[in-house]
Length: 558
Ligand code: G6P
Ligand code: ZN
Image (cartoon, rainbow, N blue to C red; front, side, top):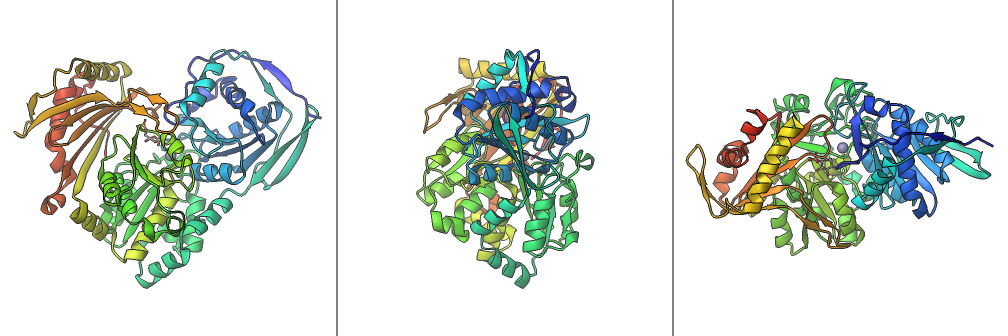
């Protein structure tokens, strides 16, 4: 029988989960009792609702993950958890954790990830709780965790319990007169099996061979390495030389594992000479994706979602289950809305954050969704899914026998193009960023810009039609989520959106999103930056971003 100790602790006041769980510097989590307090708060918040008492644990392989996994095992044993399903070596992608929660009917899961943020002793760590549907916990749960964390005075732990999480197997212990089980499972097996049910691997394989499609995939040293090997190399014949940075490293080899044009520049450069037809990158925990065509032709995530929505019949899963509806986050450009209209399917607009899609999926109203932040996914799980997106794209290529660029061009011909760009100003002084948002909020409240015309430096005039702060009423449970981003809607339908990121860990990150619609096919071929330059200038005039932050240029442009 293992001994349980009740350890006195002092509550921390800063354990409020953000867009995707609690994300802080590693050094913050290394403070005595910091991690124990937060995990104890999770268990206390959720254990009353346990059915099986099973919780899944996985992570993106970043620094501190193995130690925290052991701590979770020791805390779980001393709380009401009956069984922990732990990924081998603690490594499992976020989408795979979502799948495992669902497959084994667990009550929830703990994902040790800071997603796309850099890792290592001086960088970020994160703990995220997912609920029984496999998706990120909604505010009702994270608020409860936060409330408990603020007044926690002790935690329960089995300090002498140790499990070798490197070895697959079932380990049983007796704690407080009952059985506590730890099952260490293969990190990729369940997920790969599921992908084979969803997609027609034989058809994708045949197409890659007959068209001699050249692929280049990078895992940016994140969790996706073993998945790329298992799916792309072993099942689809990708040579090892085309699977880049596929060893998960605690510090991602110094990379910033975020699949965009800035942080996955190595992929862009490698694709530029036209050797490869299709490229993809994933983030640290494998839920984000970036898709590139030949010569590094960039697929904007908003377009990626729309093209997939237009071709779901290429995927066996949707042929079998049907398509119930589409959704996107508010800042995502509305390209998919046009597909929904054409196909006469429901379309939903939710705040930024994957958790907002879950209710709609559980209610059978949503099949495919995505965000401008390089996330795409479906109701096969309750997280966005990088590998799923790559397989979805390969299915469309195999079915249509068109190139990536041809698919986009044909899409714009049929629907017109929703030009989109996002400017990120990372690590701004929080006070300055908040002052800018307060200035914008005041403009929303006093309505002084409505019906005003503003002229850009290039001489283009826009009239403000409406300004608001996005508010969402969940169609299923009617939960209201307000203040989700300031929107400036112009009379030609163009939009400017401002938000503060909820996933950063140093200072504040301002996100400025701009989009406009172009119907004329000739114009759809122009560059997004050129097309949106005037709108960006209007955005700077309205927000006074440069004056408030002292920043002349963004850190990342998407
Ligand atoms: C994570 C979430 C996404 C969200 C993204 C950006 O990846 O899962 O749903 O779009 O972060 O969030 P942020 O608050 O940083 O803009
Ligand atoms: Zn991620």
